[in-house]
Length: 233
Ligand code: AMP
Image: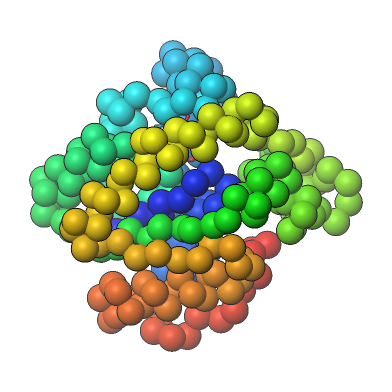
C-alpha cells in the first residue's frame, strides 16, 4: 500500500501508472476518478466540478466514500498505489481508520520533491488525450504530430485546471492542506523523499529501488528484474 505525495505536476500520475504495471497493483488516482464522475454529469459530478474548476479540494466526505468503495474491490487485495490521496489531515486519519478496520497497514509514503522551475514547465506544457487519457508534455514528451495522440489519434487538450490562475491556487492548496501530511507521516516513520526533477525513466528506476528496499522485498514480483522502460508506455 503506497502513497505518492507531491505538488500538482510533480509526475506522480505518470510514475504511479508505471509502478502499477510493474508491481501489478492498481493505481488509484482520486483526480482521475473525479474527472470520470464529472464527465458522466451525475449530481456528484456537478458538485465536484465546481471545486475542481477553482483548484479547490473536493470535500473530505466525498473523497472518503470514493476511496472506501474503490479499495473494497477484489483487484485491491494485494495492494494499491494512491496518487493524489490523501490530501488533507482528515483524509489521512480516515485512511488509517480504513486500514485498521481491514487489518491492513500502510507500507510507504513517497514524497516527490521538485523545483519551482520544473513544476511550471510541467504544468504549462501538459496535454492530455481527450480520447484515451494518455499524457504528453510540450517540453519533455511532445506528441509526434501537432496536437494528435500518438497512440489513438485523439485530440490533445490542456487540462481545464492547468490554466494559470487555477494552477496558482492548486499549488497554494497543496502547500496549505497537503504539505502538513508530510509531518503526519514522518511521525509514523513511513515517509521517504525522492528527487522528482530527473527524467521519467530514471525516476521510475529509483522509485522501484526505494520500494524494493523499504517494502517487504520478497513481496515484489521478480526482484531486481525490472527492465528500463520508457515513460510512453
Ligand atoms: P489531481 O488530478 O490529483 O491534480 O486532482 C485534480 C482535482 O481533483 C484537484 O485539484 C481537486 O479539486 C480534486 N481532488 C483530487 N483528489 C482529491 C482529494 N484527495 N481530495 C480533495 N480533492 C481532490
